[in-house]
Length: 325
Image (cartoon, rainbow, N blue to C red; front, top):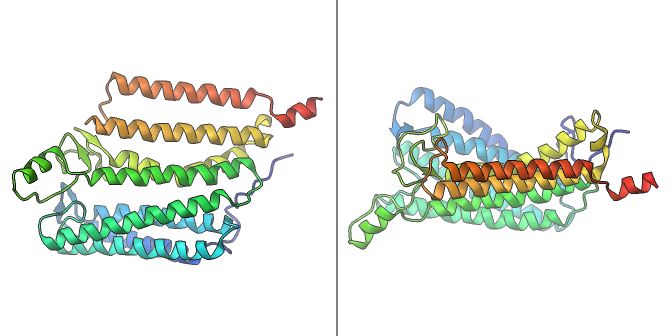
């Protein structure tokens, strides 16, 4: 018999999903369209990229975050008032973030790390405070959902570990706000630094990068670990859903304990990849030019994941022990 999962099926309605988060996801979808229009109609460049690239990326990212948490909030069975207030605080803070980003684009100014004028610095400080608030409230919601009742072990692991890893991805952004060595030297010499912080490590921001993403191809880039970590929020629930669907063909996956093991292993591998990309970036190494140490670490991660997955499928679970007896 094909196992059932407590994860909602896509054909189900969104009844019970958080309305504030759904509204934010819809608004960011509209903003995505506006940003695409900006890319087509506005020829201005900023930091080596079309000026509307940042609003586009943030709109897509926030839309995915809001849509996922709209669903996750529906699974929270404890502290309903905390859930209600938490989601609305997050929505308000993310709107502040987007208003700041779009406002600076309209002005033709950088939003992140900008210290060129007192107003630019104030805008970035407001953005920093907003995203710090989002991180704190997301942490609270993650703790609350980890205590909620979800019957399927694989689903339960996914909704606990996905948000937890996404918090790591969000936290990587705080490393970007640290002044670079050149900026520190400038400030210590009593000179004004127009930028404080950077995405890249070992090279200046705005250099050669991957199309659209902009990730540096000549030095380290903390945005990679930030991006991958953030989307654990979607990746692990999708893994749980995929395993449940595949169970119709692969008998070993019909055991809910096996699926739960695989989700936990997937979470460990995903987190390991986030840490690997953070470490690579902090060493000033480009994603497209990994050295032998990085490749070895990646190989160990892949091999360890494969071996653990094989064990998870082959090891006898308590339920199968009972059946065999």
